[in-house]
Image 1 (cartoon, rainbow, N blue to C red):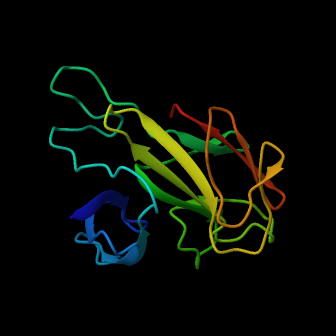
Image 2: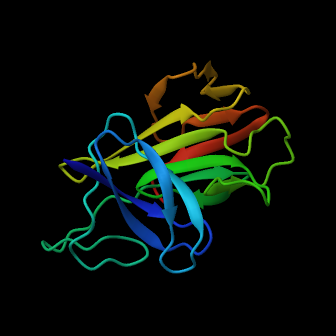
Length: 175
């Protein structure tokens, strides 16, 4: 059995469907459009999104019934939205050398370039569940004032405040 997720190329923004055997949790992917090589990490326990079988627009997926699927949401920093994608979103301090696909423009040097992973999972009923865990960093992450422990993965809720060192971002379900 193989698992799949949709990954966004951090260089050109192309959405790629990535497939891996169940025993592989991380690997390198080469973008078919620009050739950029980047790392994709599958969530440890999750229901993986199947690639869309219907046409989609930038803002929403159109279902055969005419309804729309829930959007992955955003994190905001100083009021500026940073869209999340289905699958894994590596969030960290913006830098030319940062491999994060959600780069926060903070001067906070204690906010790692790869600080947290926010994983958005589409459930069988088409609802979305959003989880956060620390990326391999040595700096503090707090969710609504509670420290995120090493190896801990928790669900995010609307309006949750995420403190990465001295940088604060907020999670919102709507783009």
